[in-house]
Image (cartoon, rainbow, N blue to C red):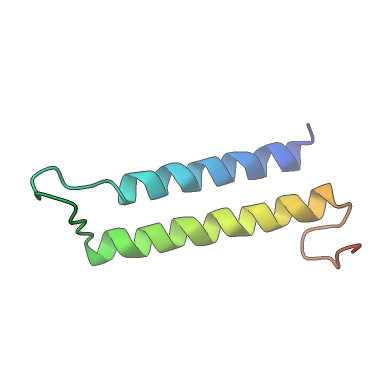
Length: 73
């Protein structure tokens, strides 16, 4: 696997792990209520942005383009 693809896959995995941590429930809150602090919400949004950015780079590389280049389709 190309080093750039390998690096971007690790970036996606890191972002998804951070998102999982940010979206974990507080065990002391009963029922189905999920309460996130503003900090955790921002962190989750940043993790999603990072994952999507890395996936776009991967798609470009796998499609034979440089990141940010025009797709072949």
